[in-house]
Image (cartoon, rainbow, N blue to C red; front, top):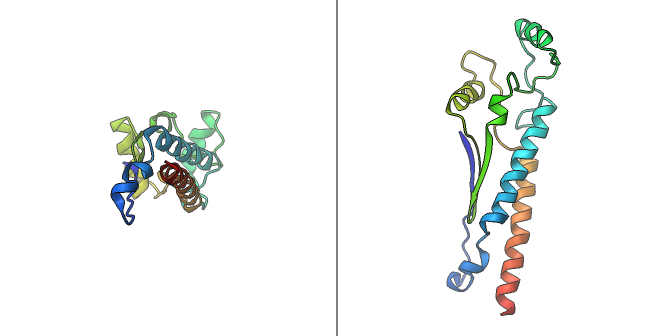
Length: 152
């Protein structure tokens, strides 16, 4: 399970602009880190990728959360913290990646995303608001690269 955002660019006279519009690995890493940060903020408030509240915990889960001294009323996809803590970011030229590093936690995440044996909770991913912000930021970077290429 991963968010793998690839940028496909088609411009007239592509050879002239090809390198100019490449978004560098460090620039794409900023996008991946932003996506991860926004995902964590959203989870803290108990919201899914559509910004809607998660289905409430079952009674048994609420009791367990109380015993663990955690708030049973906010569904934040955190039990031990291992799944959330295994979110990692990576980047390449024109590519931002957010995924779950731990294979066991990835299976648990899939279970929640698909609703297998637990209520379906679309927690892993980006809201449209986050996607729009990332696209706007990348467009600004590409515009800067093109302006620099044209100035040469």
